[in-house]
Length: 164
Image 1 (tube, helix red, strand yellow):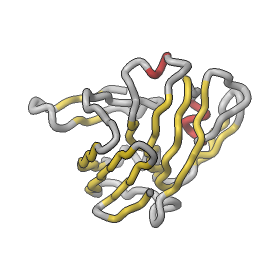
Image 2: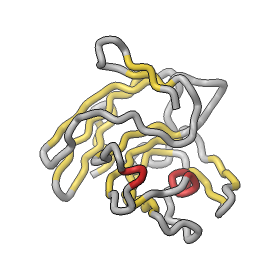
Image 3: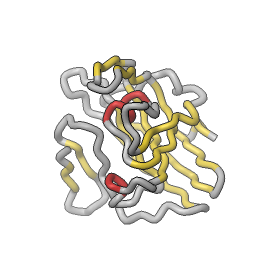
Image 4: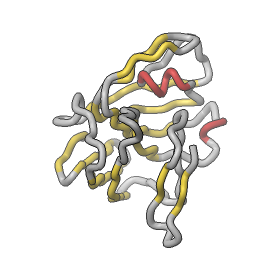
């Protein structure tokens, strides 16, 4: 992925369609943390991929077999893909998944823990209440808010509680 950070450090633009990637920040996400931000997905020739956020992700988790963090992502349209180890389908809509270890691309794509990978996996744990099976719309502003607690994550989009 290619990320371009604005001079003020307050916004970023991903300029390249890529494999799963994360833009990391030094924001500490602990119990009691509330984060809010605006997202606009520009349409790149009708692309319908995911965009999302990693909560609790540490900079070295891509190589940490003991990593545990949460992925909040939103897919524009359902889309199958034939991966080498297993075929997977990315389902349209907003989801929260628990990520453990070092998942492969197919596991990120399908929100699943495949047997062909023993380094980690992903388990989808919730879908949005109204956007769980509805995709995002290109060139639309969305305001995301996350409230993180020791045993729960609240996800709001445009002030509507989607995941509790």
